[in-house]
Length: 254
Image 1 (tube, helix red, strand yellow):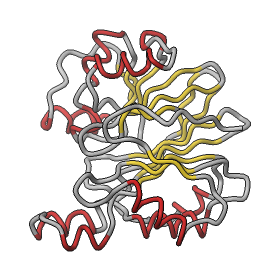
Image 2 (tube, helix red, strand yellow; image 1 turned 90 degrees about the vertical axis):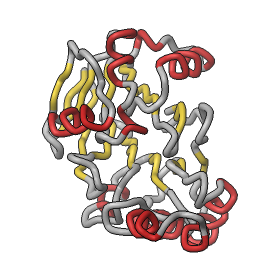
Image 3 (cartoon, rainbow, N blue to C red; image 1 turned 120 degrees about the horizontal axis):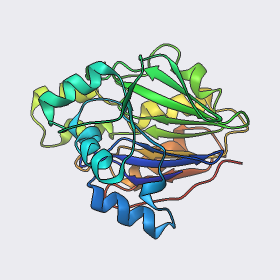
Image 4 (cartoon, rainbow, N blue to C red; image 1 turned 60 degrees about the vertical axis):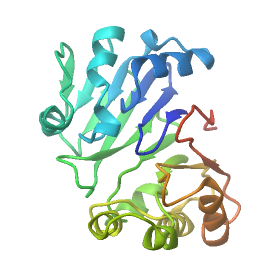
């Protein structure tokens, strides 16, 4: 797994398993994605599919470019694509493979579980990529720690997990009251504390690592996120932080 960028300014994650190459979300430009993948030795034109988690611009705005320029099929729900047209029109799409949220999608030898999330999107999902031996979760924009999330995390061998904000920074920061309410509410984003508690209670012993993602620029820092997880999270779990502005870290599962 290689996060190409993660945060409100844009999200895109590269996953390769069992010979299948995936991108999750398209919130960075085609040029950025192409260059960052090339630096890791990957030609973006060899990507087999683009999975879209939800309709917000920082996750979907360049999906049309990815398809037209690089001929990458798009997998998304119809509700997500319909809503994306209102936020950030995608242009002409010629290879869309819709799924229903909650379905398991097959791509060659991979099973990709789509997990409904309560984030304030039209039809948001997280993903679990399963090659028959290992299970990787790509779980951001979660809304809150919803029923079944802990059980899902307990089934994973590694996870890219939202750890969006530090509660004190959010409360004391410059955001207006309505935005603070939205972020901490049941359809917003989970905090460092919530993500750490989730991993403490659910991460299995076999979990290779957790990569903390979608950190807020205004209400979090990589240092704070790591400190919180080390103090409150799963003991001994290897932790990483996805960058808001660059690729990395590159991580393997097993």
